[in-house]
Length: 166
Image (tube, rainbow, N blue to C red; front, top):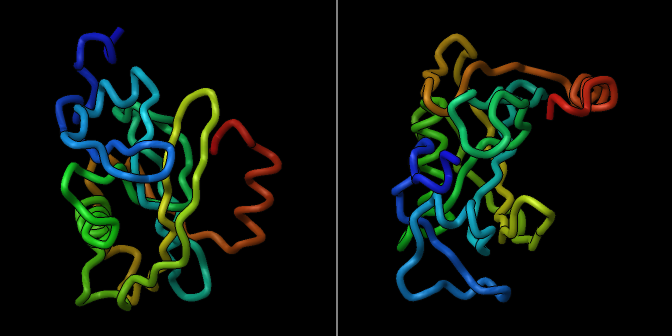
């Protein structure tokens, strides 16, 4: 119902919708229509490393997509007219306060196509090393409820033991 009414978080934000070949549409679409109609769009996924561990976010309960779940790759939907690279920089700073002053330069890994019953997305996977202190992360409460520093083994174990939490 919230999607139909355009009342979800960032519902009116214009996002980069694309065709099945990742070519942008002329005008993009409001986020809520992209979600409601499961339109192809672009999004970034960022592996955030910190002292040989992975920083994992718990998504805010306010999110329109997988609220309250653990997310091993922060990032977000690419805005209309925004590049993948600009989105990575913006999302890292907005969601956790990670900037060029406290991290290495983000490194693009690859682009991938994914679709299931909930989403159709052209994702861009990136990696960044955060050099600051965990307590120095500044969380955007509309986006992130908490962050965890987990070893890769801990991520694997939690994903096996609590798959619905991811």
